Image (cartoon, rainbow, N blue to C red):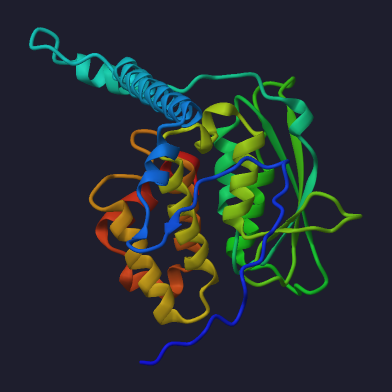
Length: 311
């Protein structure tokens, strides 16, 4: 190719003195220069920064190791004592002790009266279960009324109403939550209203049980357990079982719930848990449509919970 004369003549530029001078990175001839790059790496400031970074990384590694050891120690301390051959009953005792939850005084500042709107076709059996399980800890006082949208209560709803209003706690000085249960045509979306002026309802019996477990006795609060994520998953499945409109979808959800139960007698071990209550209430509400799809394990669970809480 032919040569061209330079278009621009060399121009002298006065560089400001407020900035530090830097050797050119690009040199003529062989391209990128390595001398300038290596000289930058050899600066005392860069060496000090690299040493500081190395020290921080070392401290982070030591901190991580300490956290791992602490977590291991906590898990070892939380394990119950192993049974021995001389005392075979120690296994049962250790299991019962490990499942014993700390009982704390109820914070009455969290207790407030509320209204529950429920359809007589979708009876909130969970309220009756909690009232009976909490009989020695909290007075869940329930008063029932019928809305004009419900011309007549079913026999099942009348029996439920008789049960939930027919007994009181044995102790008179227990903390109290007053629940006004109104039979209303709200379908499967049972709603709880804590503030009539704001009217921000909590929809779904499962979510009402979640709310009550937080403000009720501490030993019934599932969020204090290690398996809180699994419990929430089971409760969500119970919610879907009630609120799915298609029968085919309900059957599929019931299969998922049954697989979560497996062959165990209940979701909560020896004690009746919130999952057991929610699952039993949901299946009882859908029993007419899903009677043929309830497997033996789920039937045993329903029978066990019904016997304990008196459904």
